[in-house]
Structures are given as structure tokens and as C-alpha cells.
Image 1: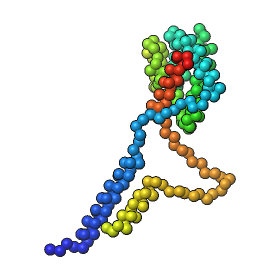
Image 2 (image 1 turned 90 degrees about the horizontal axis):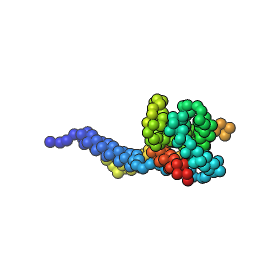
Image 3 (image 1 turned 60 degrees about the vertical axis):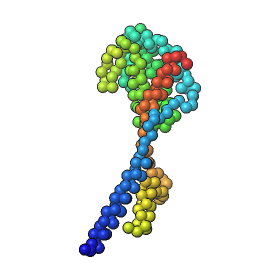
Image 4 (image 1 turned 90 degrees about the vertical axis):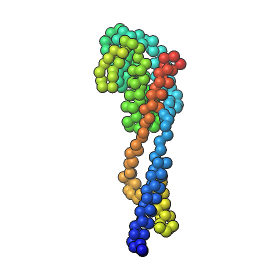
Length: 150
Length: 60
């Protein structure tokens, strides 16, 4: 019994496209593989401006913690402190603290080439860290905007 | 299938995945703007934030 010539051609074409699809998927798998590690971002160059900002934050760290403890300020969801109860020096401390944080955030964005949307992501990352580090009783703002006592 | 067809297919695949060099001819007064998509790794940023907050808390 003879096999029609067209059947041979169809089988050949099927085999070809099967191999082609396999080749495509293997290439895509190799090229599409993403490394599983966290990217490294840092303050790469310690400019005088960012050094001043870090020094300023270090110097007022205890005062910030104290004001957080009595509920005068809280960590908002944008990586800054918000004055919740004016007085007791909360206003005069929050302003330079937030200015220094802004310098640090912008430096990370610029020195790591994080682009236009980078600042928001940096702020959100710092806000998350501040929420995690907040002590019991500190006021923190959740990502949905609600303020809660930790 | 002939070997020739496999060679053509391999070349096409290579071109598809490695990309091509495109030379644009245009008006130098109207430069082409390409918006690059920067992927930011939030885990890496959190690690950076954590390191900086450690430094601030320890006073250096």
C-alpha cells in the first residue's frame, strides 16, 4: 500500500514546526529567566548635602523617637513624619527631619538612576521600613491611608 | 525538511531574540525621545532603607 506524497509533506511540515516551537520555547526560557536576588541600591557618593542630611537625622533621632512615643508625630505612608499633635516642638522638628529625608530619598533616586517613578518607590520602601521598626504605641499610617497605633 | 530551512529558521530566531540595529534618519532639530522603562526592585530598596535607618539609629 502506497502512502500519498502529500501525507509525507504534511508529516514533514508538522515535524518542522514542532521543532521550531521547541527551539522558540527553549530560547525564550533562557532569555526570559530573571535572576532571583534583590538589586543593590545605595548612596554611592557621599555628597556634602547628603552627609548633612544624615548627620541631621542622627542628631535629632532621640527627639524624634520621643515625639513618636507621646503621639505628637507619626510615620506616614510616604516615608515622612506627620505632626499629629502640634506643640512640644513637634512642628519645629518635623520640618527639618522631612527636609533631610527628602535629600536622602532624592539622592538614592539620582545616584541609582531610578527614573521618574523612582522617588515614589523609594518613599514607599522607607515608609514600610519605618512601619516595621515602629515601637508599640507609635502612630503609623497604613498604605490605605488609615492611621493606627502600633 | 532540508538543512537550508533549519538554517533560515535559526537565523530568524537569532534575529528575533537578539534584536537588530536600527539606523534612524531624521531631523536633528527634532530628536527622537525614547522613554526607558526602569524596573525598580522593592526588596533592594527596602534593604537600602533598612541600612540607612540602622545608621541613623546608631548615630553613625
